[in-house]
Amino acid sequence: MTQTYEDFSKYGKEFADTGLKSFASLSKGAQAIATEAGEYTKKSFEAGSAVVEKILSAKSLEKAIEIQSDYAKQSYEAFVAEATKIGDLYAELAKEAYKPFESIVAKAK
Image (spheres, rainbow, N blue to C red):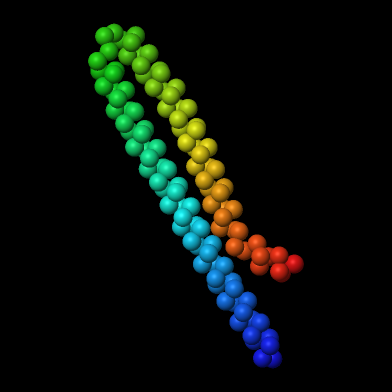
């Protein structure tokens, strides 16, 4: 009976330690994602402001439309690249958060 209690206590402690390691990975990953999203937002705002200035200083309507079209294309490409990058960060976050539990899962099998 004492051995069973000690085993249970040992596994409980191991599971709690693993949970804390996983939580640390989650915190680190979430911070990286938030930082990346903040930087993208800042760059996007700056690019949008620059385009508005260019459009307002355009000499003709055709030039303004050309500037707007180029901006739309560039902003779409930047968005797709950023979405891919953030998706990769989420995938890495999931892997890192699960990593501490791999040993427990292996022992359970």
